[in-house]
Image (cartoon, rainbow, N blue to C red; front, side):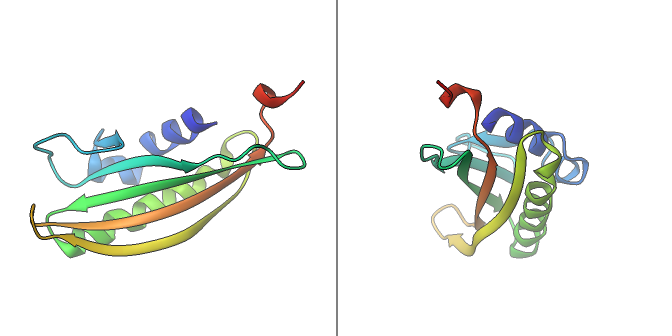
Length: 125
């Protein structure tokens, strides 16, 4: 399911128009082209009553505050649209936080998204 979510985000036309293929696992490259987005699976507890959820954090980086907010909005819209993925039934934005990295002089928006899906066959016995 995590790969399906990643592919959905990479193939979202509006988001891709802004970040191209700059959606990175965990951290940005050393000298990134901005805007760019990183993602981390924060939690993936064992399934409960046939449901599994994934909490994925997306970090948006940009040169300006306005650009960071614009791309963050596109990340949220892409995530909310991921319910077209087979087995994924609910998505919600759990947290949205603005930040600024004064050392690297870049704007940063942190978005936590929770994806609920039917229990994967990897857990079936």
